[in-house]
Length: 91
Image 1 (cartoon, one colour):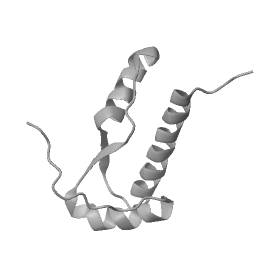
Image 2: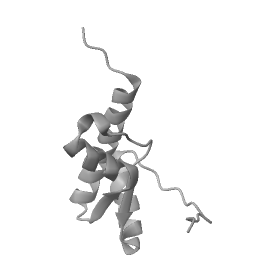
Image 3: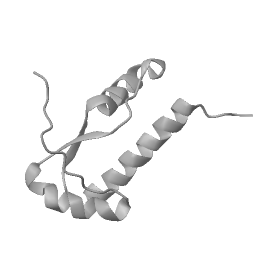
Image 4: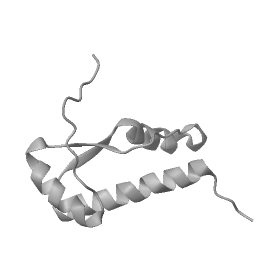
């Protein structure tokens, strides 16, 4: 009998999120790039699957001028826009 671990379930959920997002953005012809922890996970997984570790979210880089189009494109696949005012990066 095969069992799925909580980590495996988490990774599967992340990939479901990526698939839904990618389909919606592709259909709207909006360019994006996966960045952050999921991008590192994919990079490491190609070279050494057992060394790959993931984060809990999916980060994408988009052109800010496409924001309204993105909001409309992803709503039908279950995503909702939330403005995060005042966010800062250390550095």
